[in-house]
Amino acid sequence: MSWGVKGEKLQPLAKPPREEYSADLSPVLTKAGEYNIRLVLRTDEQETQEYTRDLIVRFQQAAIPVKRDPTRPVPKLVLTKPAMGTIFYEEEGKANPEIDLVGTLDLPNNLNFEPAVLVQDAEGKDEFKVTSIVKGETLTAKVPLKYKHNRIQVMLGNNWNDPALAGEVQVRYLRPPRVLSLEAPKESTKPLADVSARVQSALEITREQVEVDVNGREISRDRIQVQKQNGNTWKVDLKDGPRT
Image (cartoon, rainbow, N blue to C red; front, side, top):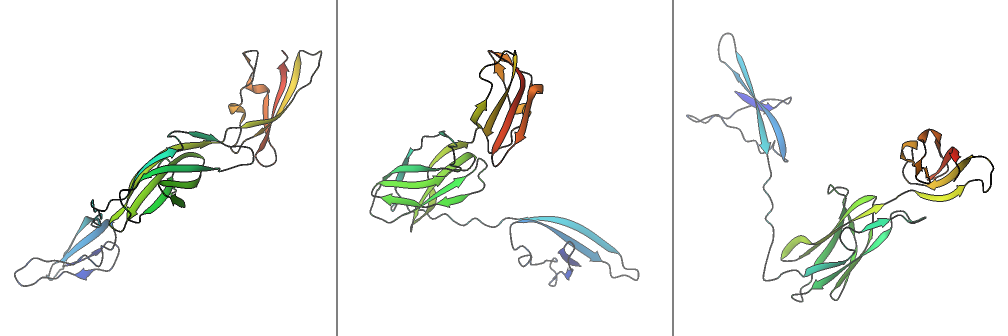
């Protein structure tokens, strides 16, 4: 009788006298996950018969014990800036701005501790660290924002306590289109006029995203044309728009 990871070389199963067949899987189960193990039984007959069976083995590594010592606690933290849910908007020429993170520490002892500031997206991915500064009872950090959702977490730990979440704030960074200029005839005897706008947008602008109305009257999108210009600039043209 033999065994092996499916698709790899088989090896015999050990069988001490009067005991069941067994195999040491530790050399195979090197990391957490699923393993497809194949068992093969060959009969000792004139015409050898072979029987196989596939087994799914799920291996989960034991969790490392968390170090906690309540007699030597880390400070408590209250984040004071920015406010939870704050929305930041792109300013001209300032992509991915930095914001100030500020928090107040309650120091229960004179023990040294290590702060860590982590920034994630809404799904907890794309994590990166930010350097923080502690002066007295104040923690500060410059946090660069990514487009859309930003989850900012502060972890605190020391020699007796593994890092744990001490404070969290979630903010958003949006980049809405900005109208840079607008061109239209100042005077005209015609009832219709062409209007052209230069728009700055980090994201693509399509005709379906443009809305135009004159005195509350919505203009058909068939009259709108959008053209990509240099950089993040777009040209939006309205043909034969009614004058006020």
